[in-house]
Image (cartoon, rainbow over all chains, first blue to last red):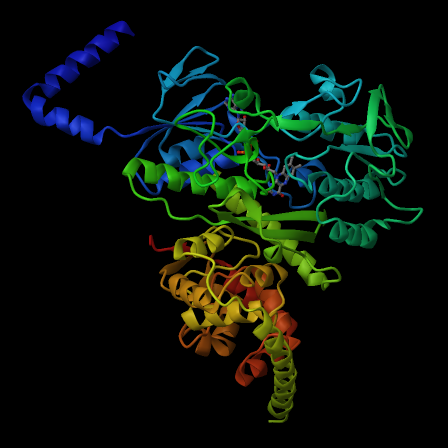
Length: 430
Length: 202
Ligand SMILES: Cc1cc2nc3c(=O)[nH]c(=O)nc-3n(C[C@H](O)[C@H](O)[C@H](O)COP(=O)(O)OP(=O)(O)OC[C@H]3O[C@@H](n4cnc5c(N)ncnc54)[C@H](O)[C@@H]3O)c2cc1C
């Protein structure tokens, strides 16, 4: 190593000798800004794709896992829905196509004085701009009996492959007749319609594989996003609201709030429920990396400048995706990608010392209720200079109208797949 | 002769229905249209490319390189809720007339070409396409969209809407569409959706 370094310095010195004056100028002028991205999820990857299109920069991606395991479309994969897309992608094709440096390691700490990021292996990387997109972490404080230690006994399936596989296994092993219990968290959490999408797709699975079982949703909230459209779909497909319903829903008011879990028993206000498959989705906060490095505020999420996505707490550092407080925008892959493109523009403006043009803030979330049946919400947001927030524009927000024609729901289920392909799968194409 | 006559009267009737649609919704339209643009040009195109990519898709159609007049008409119709597609209706509601003009020009100026994997020249849909569609759609001018490379289910739904008189079409197209058997329709769609849209690096 030492010899190598010496050799390199010697060669460098040799090469630069005839050029000292010009070479120095050349080196300064053309040393590319160093950008380090922590977290290769939707946000991190979209940022990289977007910025390499615009400017020549030196990019390093630090990602803990060798492959990305997508939560988007994971409900379809959980029940092995016919023609569900692949949700796990090796990083290598992305790395090669983007031509960036990849460090498979856990990023541990930020030294903002020396502008270094230190990894679990001890390796460190220097940056001019640090882009962090570490996703979410969990809080186990409101339900007795579950903690980080036994989370795989009550798998959330809300992050990472291990928990997803544990949940899938429990679903498949579920004795016919027992309910699949989903314990939905209180706001703010990633993918607001996610638990309800899961309910529908699991109900479809149970109908075919465990005809005496049903889905029970125990909710800590009074209502949820796209509720009317979900309920309409559940009525069409799962006899929702009748004795034979394949989905039962208990809101907070109906006693759905869970206080304790022990063995196969769930203790809620409405009573005790029993199952070998308890899908406990915990309360959430920004990922550990953000929390441990002073990027979060008292809310557990990361405050940012809404025009640039720069952290308001650490210099030269940006936060994208689920970890960030992005005003009224939900924690979705679509929003994460939107924020990533805004941030790429902001970093380019910063590097090139040009003015940043105003950005567009919008979100589209599709949810599947059954195979070939999807619904959606689309929303636009505005940034006003006298309003420190990314504000929802209610008049420009809409949900699939109730009683649409059948082909519309089918078309939306296909558009959901296209969106997944656009935001996630296509990143890993050759 | 007889079938031409019948189909012509059908398309005439369909035309009347669509006129009713048009009149009903243009009244609504007058009330709701945004009087000014909310977006800069960069913002406008950013809205579209969030979903309309050059990647192969299963439903969302390619908009790059489509004729300007066609894109404009499509957006105006979405906004007026004449072409039912809930997502595009909702998105187009955010657009002013000026936005629609700019977007149509912008995406029509993108140059594209097509590639295909299988032996497309032997495809039984090619003949049907040449006989019944190509005369107009091959021109890609005067607001006639390019069908090549559009996704299968998107084309299927569009044809259904035309047949039901809910998308407006010229009488000649009504004639061909109503005279195409289910099998022929399937073959044409299969042929067209077999192409891949390739952006020409712009
Ligand atoms: C069931 C479910 C369904 C969903 N469906 C949809 C949908 O239909 N549409 C939609 O738009 N969104 C959907 N989402 C939401 C979407 O998955 C997230 O919003 C999106 O993944 C956010 O992207 P991100 O980049 O912020 O975080 P993530 O995608 O979670 O990526 C974070 C990455 O950072 C890495 N990382 C974390 N810490 C470190 C560290 N210290 N060092 C190195 N690497 C680190 C992780 O390994 C991970 O790869 C769904 C989510 C769930 C759970």
